[in-house]
Length: 463
Image 1 (cartoon, rainbow, N blue to C red):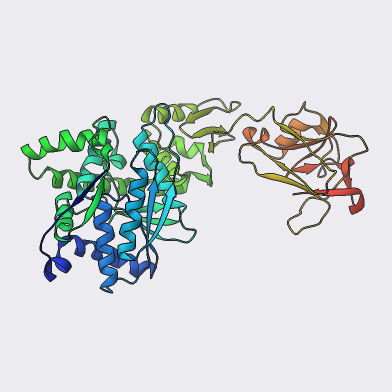
Image 2 (cartoon, rainbow, N blue to C red):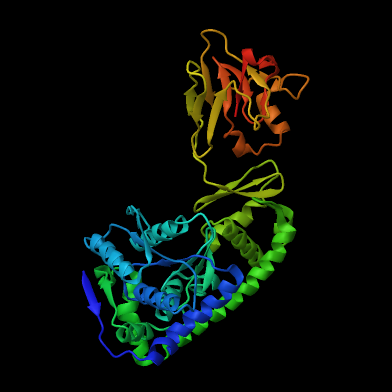
C-alpha cells in the first residue's frame, strides 16, 4: 500500500473559492432544497477522489455551509492483501474529521464471463444501497476523467445512447439518490485540491494493472489522446452530455408508448407492441426493463422477442434475456424472473409440535400451518389429516379431478387452473397440499370441498 501526501500553502481564497468546493456546494444546494436535511453517505475507498470529497464536505460542514449528517461507508472487497490497511486508514481519516464510519465487508467471487471489476462494483453499490432503510444521498467522487473513461468503455462495447451517456450526475440507488457532484471537475483539479490541503490517501495497486479495461484506457489511451488533442476530456464529456440529451428524448417517447402498451406492472399488450416500428419497439422494451431493474438486452435478443410475437395463438413462446424471461400469453408479453425448475421439490409437514412452518423454494416464501386465527387468514379451515396420513407440500400433480370450493362440479386440475386464468409458468409454482397422494388444496387459490370444515378443533389454517 502506498500513501501519498502533498504539501503546500493554504490561503482563505483557495480554501473557499476553488472550483471544486463551489461545484460541490452548487450541486448539493438544489438537492437539499428538495429533500431537506437528509443524511449524506460518502462512498469512500481512501483513494484520492473519495478523500478529496470527504475533506471538502467536512470543511463545508465545519463552516456551517451545510448542516446534513455525514456518514462515510468504506466497502472492504477483500481482493487485495492491503484491504485491512485501507480499512484502518479509513478509520484514522474519519476520526480526524469526526465523521461516522461504517465498514461493509463483501465477498466477491470470480464468475465465468464476468469481469472481477464489474462484480466488485456491483457488490459495492449493493452495500451502499442496503446501508440505510431511510432515503439518503449517496455521494461518489467520480470526476470528468472517469466520465471520459466510461464513455470509451461504452464505445468499445458498441453501446447505444444510454451507454454513451456514461455516468449520470443523479440516479436512483434503491430507495436512495446516488449523486456524483464532481463530474465537471478534472482529476488535475482534484489533485490540486489535495496538494493545497496537504491530504494523504491510499493507492490501490490494481489501478496499475492494464489487464483491466478501465486502467488500460486511463494509462495508455487517454495520455495519447490528450497529447494529440489537449481538450479531448472536455469534448468527450460534451459528447456524453449530447447522448444523455438524446436518451432523455427517447425516454419521453418510451413513456408515451408504454402508456398505450402497458397491460399491468409486468406485462404489455402484444397488439400495441406489434403496431410500433422496430426502433420504437426496442426503445419501449428497454425502457420497461429498466423500470424493472433488469439488464439491457442486445439488439439481436430484442429482434427474437419481436419475432416471437408473431407466433401462432396456441403457442406460449418464451425467450431468456439475461436475468429475465419474456413470455407471451393471451395477447400479452410478460417479463418475469428466470424461475428455477421446482417440479421435483416436496416437503413433509410435521404436525406433532403445534405450528409447523414449511420454507418454499425459489423465493416463494413460507407456509405456516396453525390452528390460531389471524387477521390475514382468508382461507377457510382445512380438516386435519386422518391418523397415519402423511401430509406433504409439492409442486407436481398427476392432473386429478377435484372439486374446488368455488365450483359445483368436479373438474380436472389443469382445467381448473385455466379457469382461474393463471399463467402457465405460474401454474408450475403453485404449492399443492396432499394427504397421502390425495389433493387437498392449491394453496393460495382454492381448497377442495371434501376437506373444508367449520370446527376449529377439527381443522387448521395455512398462511
